[in-house]
Length: 213
Image (cartoon, rainbow, N blue to C red; front, top):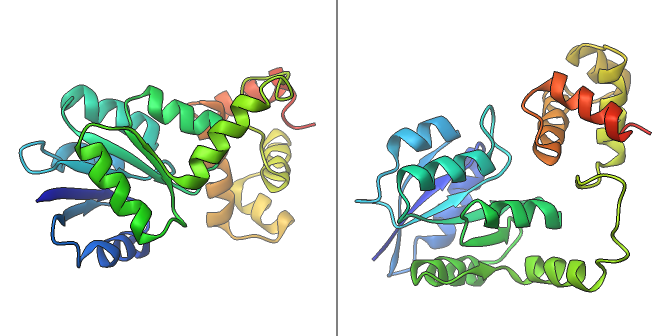
């Protein structure tokens, strides 16, 4: 029996994955955490074989969580379950010890295949993820950029420019007609993409690499 632990800040996603796997006779979801800090406290390799780990977590992101989990428990097998499709983030997760990367819109067959593969100490990339990686290899020359970060979206750029103009989160939400939480999500995504530790670091990187233009 393969014991699976889920780390995601959305209970709906956790419930969905648990439901997806509940009829698998060789796989059992034994627990979950809504943030990285709790996962680091609760996950034990004596009980957990495979961790399904989201990248976009509050406070500590999934990349850092992956690194710390494996430093503490090197025998754990970690699969990134994410909506992020950027090749650089896929590469970063794998470089930090993840054995697999699957997009959140993957079907049951793919999630099960990923769990079974990494449990056998194999690397598994979902179909869509594999295409992204291969495309990056074949278009490497085309992909030369002026900075080493994944491209930020139009809406993220809007939020970034407001941050540079010293708007508060609520002011940004009001200006762009989006919710407070959506602003924070865009901010968090940009921190993950740039590797900045906080908003001050994001501003410094944005100005240095002209991400706001």
